[in-house]
Image 1 (cartoon, one colour):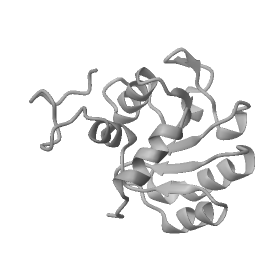
Image 2 (cartoon, rainbow, N blue to C red):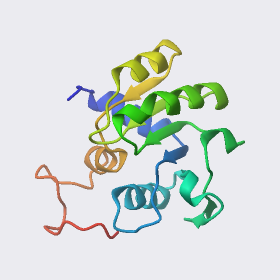
Image 3 (cartoon, rainbow, N blue to C red):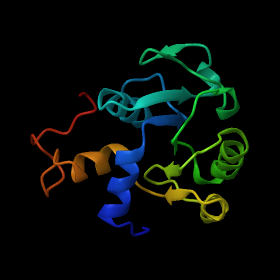
Image 4 (tube, one colour):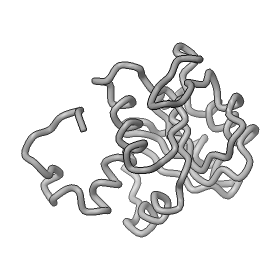
Length: 156
């Protein structure tokens, strides 16, 4: 697993305001759903992206079919897709989202070539990590054991 300093991760999470979540599910028990919901409840503007659910509402926002459909500024693209699906997502993000600062790949998602492409354009990249877990860890919501209540749940 790639090593990222707490300072690096915290700086990304503090400066980020708008997150496009690629591969978000409408199913509340799926990690992409509850991570996106958690981030939206923490004050981030979450833009859901999933071609299979385009036009539906999720967390008060319309699901977009692709990153190219987003007209507002986006700070971070959070990717919930298989590692091999990442390069075209990164290419689309770089081509269609001006001033994008971060590409974040979820736990289990890593693509070094796509990461290098994004880094060459000046973006920060995080692979194989979850912004929900890192937020909780870095901002005091988790104890060292990785939990706060002794109950692990997908509910907030």
